[in-house]
Length: 92
View (cartoon, rainbow, N blue to C red):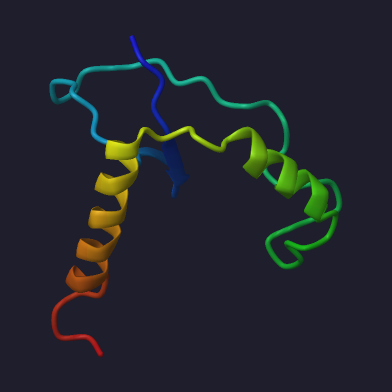
């Protein structure tokens, strides 16, 4: 068993990294019970309750989370994704 990251979008959890599971296989997902937005914040006002020191602390805590090869792979993927684009063919 391993921990993976997912995004919750339109009522569906989507993996943000490769997952080696057979189609239709079920997996357990643990979700945080805390609100998605800081207290007082909302989609319309996402900066309410913003704490820059909390962000800095979180970044410091996660320094070194990727190995050198994982970081290089992520950077290569970002460049590839930029070249591929995210818009459907035919849109401007």
